[in-house]
Image (cartoon, rainbow, N blue to C red; front, side, top):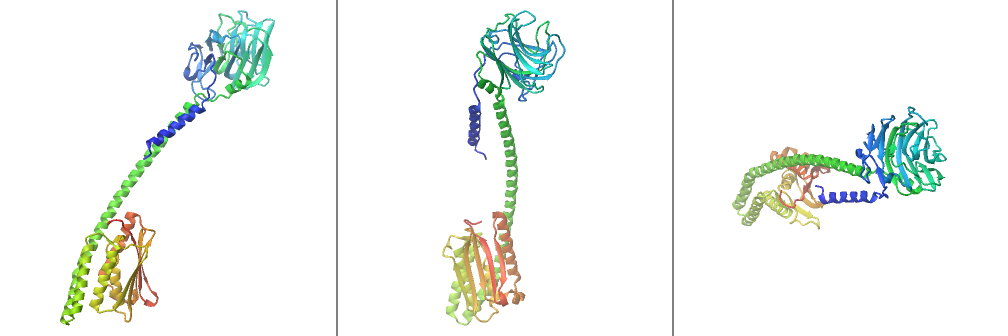
Length: 500
């Protein structure tokens, strides 16, 4: 499972990154962002009047974060009439996207963006204003003292419609400056104090003038008033401002990614759980099959024991009849030790390599005496191998040694040799080689015992089950030497830390 503290620190780091990356801007004295349908000044909390205005997407694509005006006399915004909007020294920043030219109305062929009056007269009345000129297709700003003194600045480039543009005007008693998309269009000497009509409001999208009555079809956003003259660098910073909802969007996206990741992790965990459950059931089934096979092996061993016991006692009887007292005594001692080892090994599913070698030695000695054969045998182990600490599955080697005697060496004249060697492979396998110099499987094929073939079949089945249960790669290979000079059995067994 994922560590919960790890997730906590990841999200803490994300939140810290978001906080650090956020820029703290100098606050304006009045701000109309219209975000989330806000219809008030976010500094003073004064409400605005929305007349026939709708909310629309802003320049970042955030819904209901800008105002849309429809281009007629019943569609405009009244920002209000309070000191923060009528400053002697000020900067005004806003964003506008003009859709269509509005020819309806009377007077100068302009579409008003922002207007406030300095007089009740119908001409030369703008304290400050921004217009889109219909015929010139550019953006214009003006400020008027009276009929003798008016400042007007036009953009040098055609004002592209259907696109958001950033407009800034700055003024004091000396200069009047106009920026379009952070580019300074002009800075004009002013030489007078800006005056305001005390009864008039600041409006968007209408001239509110009987003689020059015009309207705007477009969107306006982030109208901000500052009580000082912005520098060009500050204007550029405003123009390059990032989405105010960026951090929220980033966090929202991170949460979506987290939820999606949690969903994927849950699905993965569920699939893994179902897979492990299925694997566990399959493993239990294989273990049950392995237990059943082990039981069959024990039954098979038990069925062989009376036959082996009868033959051994008969051999002992022959020694006694022949008055071979020493041989009878030796045979009885070795036989009793072998029977004891068989009984001990039959109680467990695994056996130490040391006990396995001892049992094979007793078996070979008993068979040597019973058949009066001179079978020479050798057990070889690696120097690094501790026979007492290595455990292997029980009854895996004796059938092959027995086959070597019965089907390879009894019918052979001359030296009769069995060599059994052990080595460790990959620290988890015991590699065993049982080699004899008998007559080989082809020559002795007709003498193969059905019971011994069955025992080898059980061994193959058990190796297959061990491979499946413990994800091992155990194997059995039986090869004939060239010219029928014997047989080599190569068997890879698992090293068991504890009995299966």
